[in-house]
Amino acid sequence: MIETKILDDLARRLAANMPRGVTAFQQEIEKNLRAGLETVFQRLDLVTRDEYEVQAALLARSRQKLAALDARITALEREEHKPMALAPAPSIAQNPANSNSSNPDPSNTG
Image 1 (cartoon, helix red, strand yellow):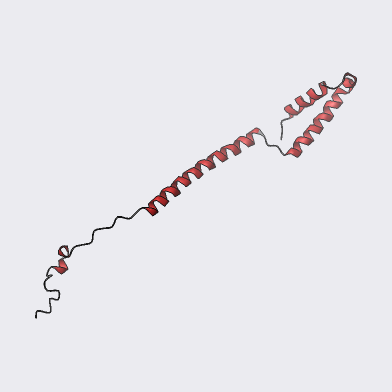
Image 2: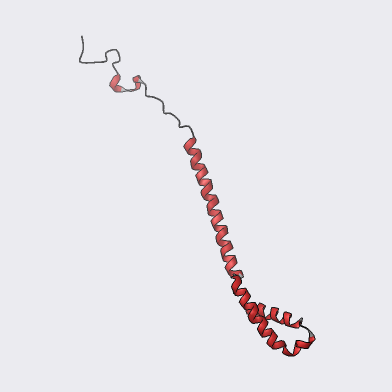
């Protein structure tokens, strides 16, 4: 809701600009103008400066989180499309089970 000080000031300014003939009714006019202005501002569904600043801070924080998540997704996508390094195949000479490579079946001596 808009501050009452602002409404009072605005009502006073409007009443001060009224023609001279209605200055006798100035207080009543101020009161009626203030009530009318208050009704108009309520219909506008305005927010206070504090509420606006809180929402702006939340939006800034959300944007930061979104940027961080976007960077993280981009990094994960790069990792996913990176070619994987193939491990070298073990050679037969390094495998002790195959030390007798000339005779593949030790039970067959024949």
